[in-house]
Image (cartoon, rainbow, N blue to C red; front, side):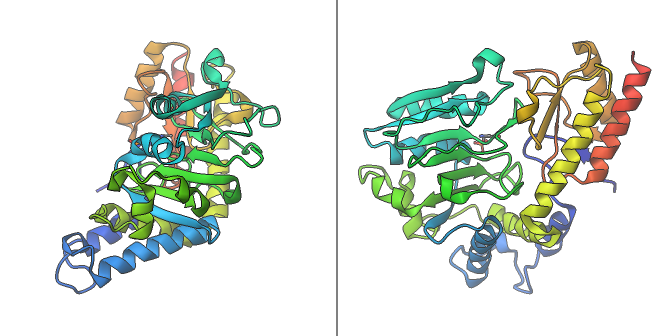
Length: 360
Ligand SMILES: *Cc1c(COP(=O)(O)O)cnc(C)c1O
């Protein structure tokens, strides 16, 4: 068996040691004679995994004690509605419209309450982010929503704005655990697991406890954050397989040297690709402003669409899949999350050079 290089945007590549350990344990988990995913979510064995995953998150991200860690269902998409349903409570919030994902979150928030748009990137086709110094946040807003990495447009906030007393809420689905974070600036962080954390099915939510008093009692049980805080995310059956795999992925990150190592790795891998693009004499081009190029999703164009198609087809034949850009924007995209090894990126860079020389 040989593993290919997987550049899919999500669900995405997982660390091989994580997959191997799952394979080893799937039939008989630690001598129990059954697998963890066939066990009650109230069992000691499952609870250890659940709580271990929470501690790893706290440790890796240095989460202060006044924040709660939740594992929810419904993807990042459910958070587009849970955040405003729980926190707006008749007041207004601020949004930065930076790409497809921010717009989806905005569209749901607007159905719940009043939303002020404080940045709209549509004029630049979502290739730029606001200058953080000039971003004007309404001091009366309950929160400022940002999308730390726009997976489709390949743009990433390098630094986070200073929103004064207004907490920032961020969708971090595609760059969580790729760098350390100033957690205190955030009121809530959410991330679907299937890009940089583990398999699909679990969504990580980190919420500051002083926001919990805003959640209306009129909300149905599952939709209310308080329900999950009170039950340590065990109100109903959690996605046990996804949390088990997430726990293994977090152990793997710790073993690699934590978020500092992940950040350096992301810097090296993305630089290799951006250098290959910038040094190609215009054969490859990156539409994104240099100030906000993503270290997770590198988007690029070739001279024409025909060559882009040929590029991804030939790459697939050479064992590199998932390089076609999102259908809504076209072009090419290499998603290089934590689990993508440097060798995978070197292989892609060599292929890019070779392809350009053969297809002038
Ligand atoms: C993939 C993605 C989502 C959607 O996640 P689901 O888990 O499919 O709901 C939301 N936001 C960002 C930034 C994403 O990359």
